[in-house]
Image (tube, rainbow over the protein chains, first blue to last red):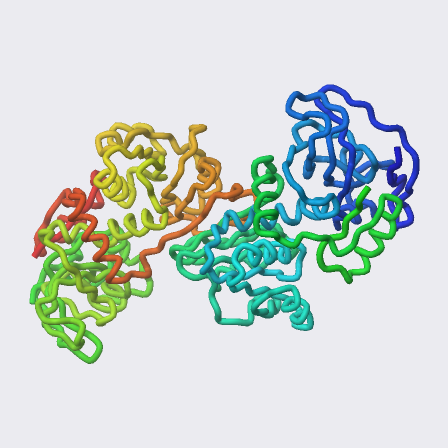
Length: 316
Length: 316
């Protein structure tokens, strides 16, 4: 089969499009024919050698969409449309940058959808994270919403999910550089606020806050949540994973709520709920760039250029 | 008027029942005729000289129930039944251990209730804290409930509020010493679990957890909350006010919620909502001991003996 193999850490040039042996099924693992996948920053880090646990040579790729090709499980019929995300694919074992990928049965999720492969390939991880977070935020149509880190992939996905279902809902996005404000308005945000050194430059408060910067700005977010409101801590874009001196009484005002979402816990039901939602409300999920398997190098180069907003995918 | 004055820090013997001048109203302050008040541990600390900001001589007492006697506010009619809690009463200025107390208008809350003075005197602070926390926990009749520190005053009040409205609701109380289990069952708990060095000795999970120990055990409480469940951090009985290394993703499982309650923010509407609830559901609020103003010394001695469960009040 064709695959993209990395034999040692390096720049995009180490992504070698080549012929390798098609993997053979073994008990507990099934073979998926890859139809598409998104390109993720985490794969760039791995390629550069920043994931110490990853041994080369390795086929990268932490997510994919495709069909079951050879199965070892009664729950996975050959030809079944599936999504796989999370787990150790593309790290501890070979991933999705290939025509076929051998995966543990428990991380192969059957899905029902009419989306084209290129659109479906743009959905896992980013939209799933946004969808799961919005679910925990228990959004109602009259809510005022703040997406902290409005320009991020998850942020833009959340905005699209919200606007598709509730066209009138008011969504504010925060940015660290106000030069990005125009881009946020173009993407559909109703208002933009500056996030200056971890402080939002506004006195406004919101019903629901999707906190994608993470622990670095969480306390500040709670200064901007209305009574009865919820903050969902989902991202760690701020590069800080935890907080010292956290004081529930004081940092979480009376009658406001903190929850969190981590895409580490995936379930097929929630994935299908998301796909139903995307089709029902015609959520625009189309990727901004589509490459072929032989162009993974170019896809990495494009993502690294930093010009991208939205999702970059590969379709086979 | 008669009052209980503390002229210098010390044991119960420094509580001097004596005659003092009745305070005179001044702009922004009104005079309340005291009908009763609860005795609190914080007053014992103050009496012992453990509140450095309190200057003696001082009339102690951080809460009271009574009627408006002389008013400087259109919102406070003479004869109006009122509750006062929080603020700096009994600390920065003279408090409720007296026949009359002069209070800032903004901390005098008009209330409507048919409760006897001795019962009403048992309500402020403890029941208000329990009631406010349960509100934020959004309790439904099918919820499984854990009260962490089941023997505490707020814990027992919360249990009574719950059982009065939902006789069938299952409430578990935690205790550090299982020798207290019998007392908890006697008070109406359905189950008792041991809280051993900050870990609950059970694999059970609950819909709603009232966390009265505080930051010291909060992470452990989140190991015992069901999906969609809420933990309300209310107390700091564990003597720890904040947490280091708190990691929202990880410490707060997907789709569970942390909220907090602090009785620092009082409002008349919520106080009246609580009184309506207490009357409607016949919540047993009667104090365990009733003293007169001349017996405040005995009341402190009793509270210090540590035998008490429930509220000790003084009625005038």
